[in-house]
Image 1 (cartoon, rainbow, N blue to C red):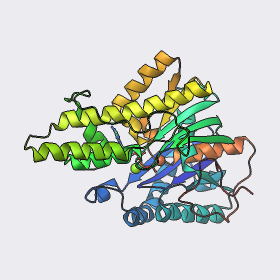
Image 2 (image 1 turned 180 degrees about the vertical axis):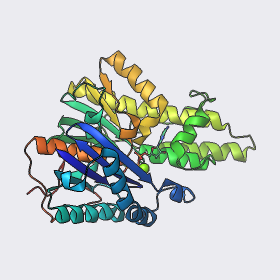
Image 3 (image 1 turned 90 degrees about the horizontal axis):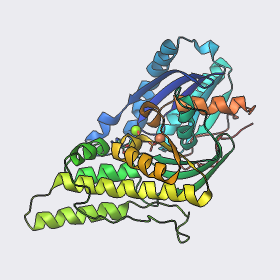
Image 4 (image 1 turned 180 degrees about the horizontal axis):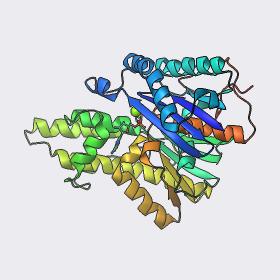
Length: 349
Ligand code: ATP
Ligand code: MG
Ligand code: FE
């Protein structure tokens, strides 16, 4: 099926068009620059930017895919989770488009969309089930057990405080580096010693005390970095930014990879899929690949352009649902900022 997907859960206005598992176009307009001076995404600014970017993005995606609106078999949209106001812009636009064109509308889960991005990778073998999936972005840190992308996704763990990307952004800020912090920390860490400072690894072991066995926590780490920097400043010693950045990054990477591979081992699943914008981190990919190989786990990493928020992954998920014979969503659904990952399609008829 030819599907157009609309993604507006955070600061990217993403419009993607797929034909089944083939990617035809994927346009992304980001309002990141407008948020930079606030050090994080400002919801109202993001919502207004979506409103402005949507129509031109749809036009561009159609032109790049060389298809017309009338050719579409379905429209897909992110219903949640994400920023309520931002989501609402996409949901409103998708409903309007579907009604005007008289096409079926699929409202889907953003997090499951991140997994669906994998099936658009033209160079990869077909996705095998079950797989463990680690999604790390500015808004989410989630470990999932995926038995079927279209029907059975279980939450194994999520962050109880900051998301991994958010931790990068906050630590960058306290080191005086600009937003978004991930790439800045990465750059600063190039000349740093990852073993210079032993920062705490919060919730690095599976725990029955946590809400979910594989929950994550990054706020303790962020606080530890803040204390360390404060103490250095109080002592009047220059802060070794490169060492702090490298040591912090090492702690985040260590926890993410340790937890993900623990889930693979505990559940007997020798497959790990990585997704989300933090996967841009070279060190995270290297450590994951290295330790997974040692543990006999195969790792899948979709192309980076499909790992960050985009509309193609939303269209891809809807195309999979259609291929499974699922009907469209009714028009009763709305934006759901806290949509649980188990709800893959929202409000199916
Ligand atoms: P959502 O959470 O809704 O998926 P988001 O826009 O917050 O969306 P992404 O666009 O997927 O998340 O990723 C952005 C995040 O990734 C930011 O927090 C950014 O700092 C982080 N990031 C980007 N590059 C790197 C990197 N090289 N290392 C670490 N973190 C990175
Ligand atoms: Mg983003
Ligand atoms: Fe996302």
